[in-house]
Length: 392
Image (cartoon, rainbow, N blue to C red; front, top):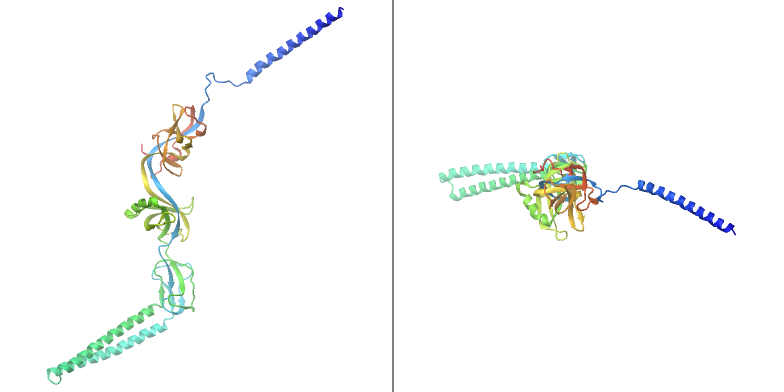
């Protein structure tokens, strides 16, 4: 009977020791967990966000019209013979540059030379007859003065002289016609340019105005044809004044750029595309602009005066509209803006002032009133160029 109370006391003692051990482990783990937790600012404010800003500038900004154009020669002539004949000699080679009036081909001239000689002989014969008629008329005048012949006989002699003068004039015209035909045996370049493939060789027969001989294409200057939207027609017509507005063309993004002038605006709007065909003329002394090549064309149609320009990358399209973030007293300020014009890396906007610090990098993490730290500050992509100086 004494064993049961003793066993109960032992169990109670073991339970108390276990509770004390568990309480010690919990108390020891709590400080460790507290030590490993990150510190939270006492005020509960979010940490500042690092950003990059640029300064908004006020300057003039050109409104550019960009299009794809095709290089076209100002003149390109398919050279053909004006008479049916045989090629006697070819004086040029494929791809040769020629000057205006340079001899290209010679045709067989023998028949035409004979015709010229025949006409000249006929002229000599008729000149002799004219001289005889004039002598007869002089004698008739003398005889009339001595009353040996009548006035009618004198008039007959005068008519023979006039008739023979007409015959001589006709002979001279025949000689001129024969010389024109003879000139057709010498085929010359109608203008300076580059010859294409020579399609004939010596001995080939050519048919008048049918057989193509060679194509002469003018390369300097050369034109670029492109189309502009109908809405820019008035700007293009205004640009034709004072020698035409400046137009630039390039064969690629990193290729050399060429400068020319707008010279032609078509007299009709294409009803299918709503565009107008225009043409600009470029100096091409090195021949880098080749007929048929595609080029990227850029033309200044107007200039925005004294506008605020920021990098296009700083503009945000949000559900609230178009906005930018500026920095004032270390905080991000949301400002609604309107994009007046965007070209390349730059955008002309309204709604902010020149000199404002505009957030360029890190804007995706901002909210109005967010504390910020500016990592760098500069003019970035909207720095003024040498042609467009910044205005204070």
